[in-house]
Length: 463
Ligand code: ADP
Image 1: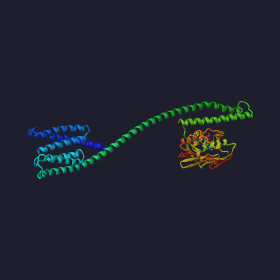
Image 2: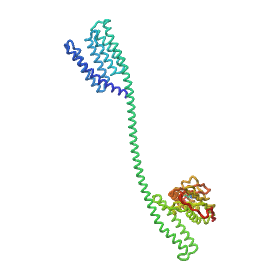
Image 3: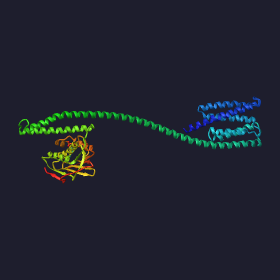
Image 4: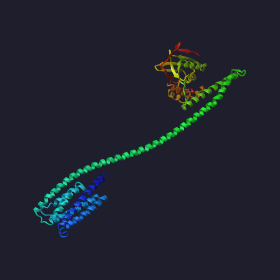
């Protein structure tokens, strides 16, 4: 690469120098031929004339074919011979012709290599002596006349060497820079290609993602529609079963025996449970479809908590569980969808009732700055900390056999968390196996309002 670059520059130099020297030589030979008889006295100038034309055209042809070095050798050898012929014919004491060798000494260093100047100086000195001494007798005075041009030509060789060496150094640096620039350009090209490929890959991935998203949305919509339809279709006959069983059990269509009443109660309870399950499924379907709407209104927290506590009492009738109300002196106002908020609270209290056999279930309400903590606490079976996040995912029941015994869908907690989060709050669990559980709901308080209760002390309600 470096060599190629130097060769290119050398070829440029040859193309510049050769025509100049050739034209000058042609002109000089023409003028010289006019001054005498061409064939007898001026034949050497005729040779110079024709030689210059030949060298001029051939050198350019060689350079064009990429043979720069051969062109340089042809040019230098031809002019060394032609100049020597002229010196042989024209030299006389005091003639400046020997100094002309210096011109070619310099050119040789330029078009071959820096040291070539010394080589050409050697050849030209030999040629000068040979040309002069074939016509002049060897004498001290002749040699003395040839010494100054030989010294001057040597100095020219040295000067040409230095400048050509510097030129070479510059060429090397430039070619190194050129090489680095090309390397950099290649690297940039490679990076550009890689970027293009990465872009294409990204585009493909994006398109695939779009397709996957569309499929997922279509599937979700289909599932939601299906769940909605199924829920609605089941709800009507279930309501009929529950209501008619209730009417029959209470003697609405004539007297029933105790055993019949017991069976009818069971039908009513099972139907009621199924209705709850259906409601959960419907809620979840709405949540997933993003169609779940809240009707927010400002409300006092006390009646909401109290209603939930009254409801939970019915669930623990047959168990030795104490109900504890740990209420604040001043009740905060919250902005909630009262039905949905009660549903969330009932889910938590219902779970406490389901998973607790004895001890207590407490509802602790603690206003703190701009939020209120509502803690549902029980002394039931507890939950392994490893499952604290899992129980908030749909259809997760930790011990399925256990859960089946207690009847549940695994949808209560996910719905509860969604409801609370939609109210701007959150719900977390603190629990260990065998040590009971605490579900802690936080809810923002409406800043402007607070209601005082008549008797705010902590109350317990034995069953
Ligand atoms: P499920 O209808 O099964 O109760 P949930 O979503 O309400 O569904 O609860 C998920 C699981 O979390 C339950 O199956 C149960 O294993 C566990 N869990 C929830 N609440 C309690 C609690 N108070 N004590 C112990 N385990 C609980």
